[in-house]
Amino acid sequence: MVRNSKLRNRILILVTEKERNLGRRITQKEIAQNIGVSEQLIGRWMKNKVKQFDGETIEKLCAYFNCDVGELLYIDRSN
Image 1 (cartoon, rainbow, N blue to C red):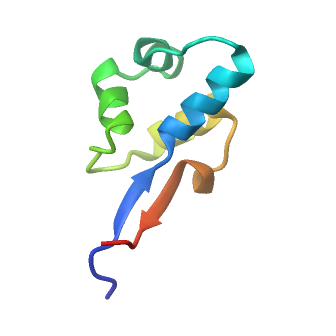
Image 2 (image 1 turned 120 degrees about the vertical axis):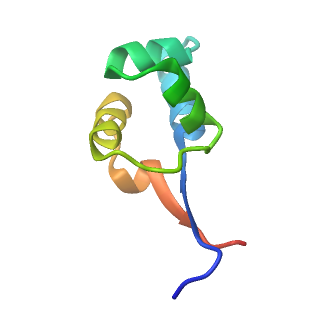
């Protein structure tokens, strides 16, 4: 059993990269509207406060950021 491991996300990095590519800021509202989820959910993702990861949301985020699951999620073993 692996102790103190947590599933985390890299959404802030992906947002920064997309903003750089687009040459403008991206809001939580914009992300939420584009993928069909609430702004509150995107806020939880941005703060790494998501407790249960929904497969459909992960797929939508990966499509929005044009990334693979491994670029969005990782296991933090530093604790």
